Image (cartoon, rainbow over all chains, first blue to last red):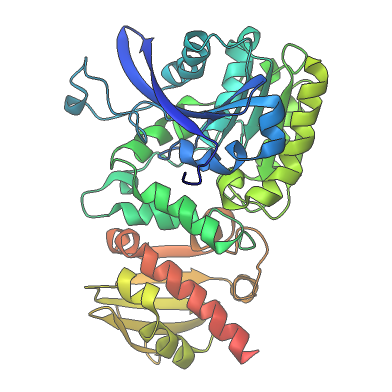
Length: 283
Length: 124
């Protein structure tokens, strides 16, 4: 017999706004369900280290999914998607984990995401609090303008630009092999997807006038941000936590924009206490 | 601070730079505070890198305050000066000129930034 990783992958069909999507996810562990959302232009492989953690496997059913158009979740068959510019909206993005949780019959899962996934944690907390047990936003902020720009999908600029730009969002102290792997995943995204995802990241996600609606007494919310993240800085996340109600914030020293994939061991030091609290509250 | 001769030699024997800079011709002005340097890349190799005697047109200009360059050249700089984009977004670096060329060859420029940092360590 060969040596196998713990994660097992399969597909589930999600119908969102009348369109059916064949969505890929990988899972490992048993217990409290936790949905894991990747960053813009990437896919669920960013969570591979967490999925392999034996201690987390004992208490959590960890589910890392690829958004439609990302990774192994190919575009839907029911629409002529190629006739339109790809653009990720808040409304659609919020419906993905909510619909996935329903289809997998999960009992109020935990949700954790980074970057667009971090922003999404806050949008879900405001709009779908009753669906979730806890929301964890990594690299989240009130708004992150300036990202939705043509250079991210230009015919004269290759995908390697995205990969190396993302490389610089990581901490210089993170292991190079994992920074390179994180960048490699970026180099594999379909050309229009990263820019389209940044529509949500930089335009459609905007809590300027409603950050006070983020209420940790409705559903527990944790925010954690990497010290070296220049896209969504610790200062920006702290400001969000300050304006919100009962939201816990922590800066992750020595980490950047991709904590779970750039330095899994260091990220573990920050996320293990959060998961422990969630487990205690669920008992 | 970085050592231009060493940067040229390291870059021209660096596998990652060779891959990222393939087919690239570019004149780049690098301004450290008020001090301009000229870096010429021809067919993916650093042809020259030296203090600029007289100002002339450049395809791309990367500029930053002296103190931020000094911080950026440390082995582990403070957050945001560890990266060219971070230095632009959150500090006071500027990039002007042929931006499409900058984006297309950003992987090479990013590697060059690292090589400049390593040359600074060798000099120290």
